[in-house]
Image (cartoon, rainbow, N blue to C red; front, side):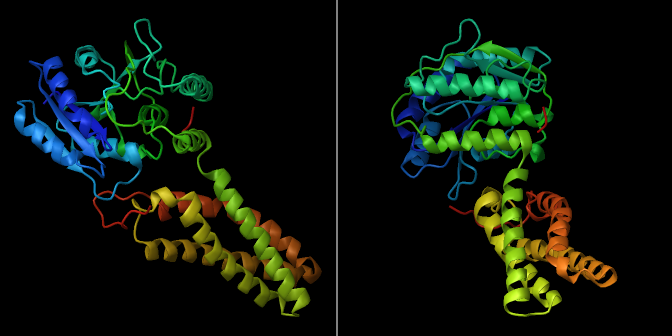
Length: 371
């Protein structure tokens, strides 16, 4: 199999038949399969199965009862199941006309590129299918912004926001991809330096059904760009900062208002903020990685365990400073300094261990890059 065409779908039953008919005609004579990765809540899966039975082109259905990571997660599922040497990604709403497939596939199979992108920015390309001026503005702005932020990675891509592209599967490192955003091409290009070629692409008006574009998608794109550029460090710092302030406030209250011995005050403050930080990380910063990481109690034990060890070491150092330097009056200040020192260690451990994404291991049920 030369090419697997991955079509992520969400309630696109009205477009399935036409997409398969036009694709079958466009790729006639080529070794191609279509894989629908479907997250629908309507009758789209049944329609796909019925259409597949009526056509000679190989059509497979992967229906995700509990979708993870939206469109990006669906594309990743398609990558993992693809039988082709190359994978082509295209929308299921007919905004990527199947008639563009021959040019994209021939460019992929006939050259030495690792990614072939359908670009709306090249001569012969078009963005006419964007439904309104705001979407045109957003596309142009996000394209310029990402090319400015990732000048080396995106040097060969005039349209990194494109959703129509081909990628050679043996050039992909799926472990690097974190497809929480819906711009999967941007994710691929920014995570690893890829050799890119382009062909003109047209974004046509969508077929039946409703557009999935909304304010939530704009927010997800913003988060995706921030994470690609600087990772989750700012969010982790914010949670850690709030936890640090809470830690100091609790310790100061227990020590100066309750009259508790400073060491016990530090221990209690540390325990409270360990639990609080974990809850905040689970439901805000790492909420999208919970489904792909290990069980929640594993995460809690490792997060809490590491933080407890870090707290114990930090508290011992605090004790040593206070004891040997006779600095009890400055205990809160030294605690603040030591909290900053432990921050980078905690961030690295959570990124590399606690929320590391698993492959082929038991995981939780899903919940609702350098330049």
